[in-house]
Image (cartoon, rainbow, N blue to C red; front, side):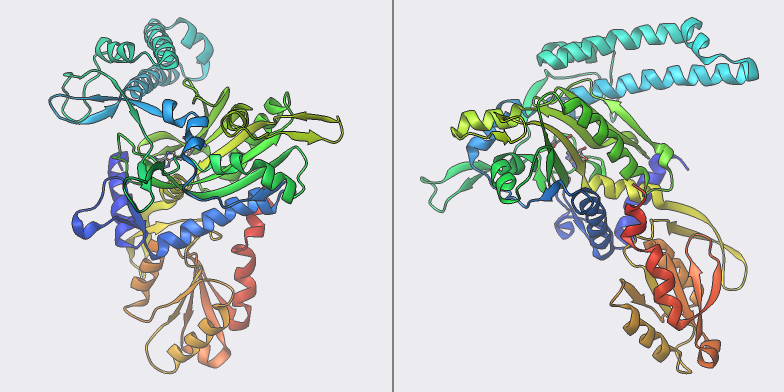
Length: 516
Ligand code: GAP
């Protein structure tokens, strides 16, 4: 299936099966804002719990926080967001579409890199066993020509981004003959800076009201509470503060479903370390976070690290964890070395000391920070992309039919168990209800008696329910049910009293957490 088709199908599936709806849909929606439906909110809550448990519960030296979305306006001056949280935007005069100039160039570079890989693959096929990839990359004239072009544009781009040279960014777009992906036009405007923060007014009387911002990252709530948390929870460096919550950005380009939203959720952890120790912890967190991701998917090979070309204003080193979505490799999480930038700036702007007294070395210092920052909505999209499959399955009559299934890890699945009486008579619904009453304390389960058993299985497959038990006539005789596994579709006969015990381990967060 073409990747664009897959992406379209994911969006349609998410809506049809109650995962994600466009916001205010009856008014034709609101750009890049989405609502989570009954199964979406369950999945989202479970991803958040997996993150929270892995970061806070499993680490004695990481504690949680839930800071307010509104913060004093000076926070954003100190953090640099008022002056530096900008994207370079460019308009196409013909299509009237708006783009990020940096994204257009990065996509162009991605395509050049893909062309090189394609040449290498051709070489591999041509030379078979004798193929020496390193030598091929160093000597093949077509690869060398593409590489030279890539390096030249890449260097110009990195330098322009660093200096925020908007004219040069436009020149690169013109020199590379980058066309509007929608219309094919090359009729570009100048590049302009665009601040991504949403501004609103605090106060009831308009003359007295002051401008404040909706937070564009949750991290600043952690920085301004650094000493409150450190002292009240008696934390010793190195230690972390974690929180998950809403963030808001007035994104220029918002055409990729929940990948890029204007209102979204982040799960961030700031790890405070002794100055000089930051690279040690940066490398540790990079590996730990990758392990966390690979632990919950069917396709761990779809992840990769990507080192930042263009660093955010607060970072001196940054890696992204990228996943190969149907729209290509994209960032899901950033691991940033933020130095002492934020705490030092908040000291300056607030006039309050934000230092840590190290009882071992008997010195005070402003700690350095390593940050892990993951988007909850992007992780949600990653889980859906990873889980979605169309395949053949045997119908109740034994013929093969199509099924769409979400192979979501059982621990994260919105519904764990469906309880299905084979028919709506002969006392089977009553037994099924009794099973529901027993297990609803332990996991999210669903009762369904409508339609044929095959159609009910299909409905559960589509929302990713890992297990179904069917109550049939044999149940009335020997108190056993069939337990169907979503992925293997195998059905085993088990006693009713073993349902809880058999599922408990498979859906326990413990099984996931023990592996990271
Ligand atoms: N505190 C650092 C920070 O905010 P970031 O790389 O700008 O860093 C971190 O954002 C993560 O937040 C990203 O890796 C992404 O998963 C998520 N994110 C950022 N902007 C987003 C948006 N517009 N929509 C959805 N998720 C977004």
